[in-house]
Length: 108
Image (cartoon, rainbow, N blue to C red; front, side, top):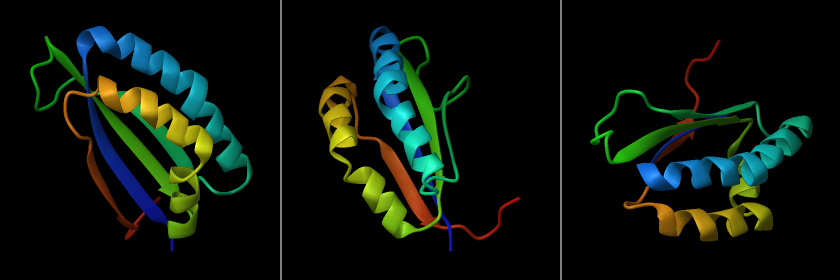
């Protein structure tokens, strides 16, 4: 059964360009690699245009990931390259990410 992961990340507006550049350089290639190996079905990072925080000071990002199963999710989360990225990105976040994941019920 596939698994869906949804994460809301919050960054200060002044840190957003650095976060986006790091993400594009470090995480996006991992997504491509894992997708080519069949370990990621789809993935996206979307800056929210409307959200729950003050958009003059903060930007929220919607991170959406679909994987074939929990083992693929765990493989990505424990990849040393991803962990290195997290060490740099987490201090830039003014609050903990909001994270949800579970077995996909319906999908087209």
